[in-house]
Image 1 (cartoon, rainbow, N blue to C red):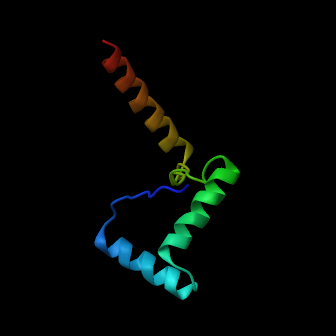
Image 2 (cartoon, rainbow, N blue to C red):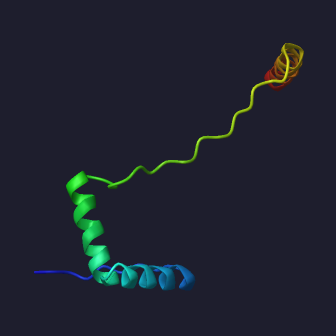
Length: 81
C-alpha cells in the first residue's frame, strides 16, 4: 500500500526543483522518494541542518576589549535593577 504526500512551496522553488531533477535524469517524485528513503535510513536528515556560525571578529586592541567589557557590565547592572 502507498500513500500520497503533498506540500506547498514557492513557484520559483518548484521550478528550480523540477529543472534540477530533469538535469539529474530523474523526476521530482523520484527525488522525493530518494530523500524519504535516506531520511528514514539516517533516522533524520541525511545532511547537517544547522544555522551558520556567526562571524566573530577579535577586538583590535586590549583597550577596545576592556571598553566593551565595561559597557557590558554597566548594561547588565542596569538591566538587573
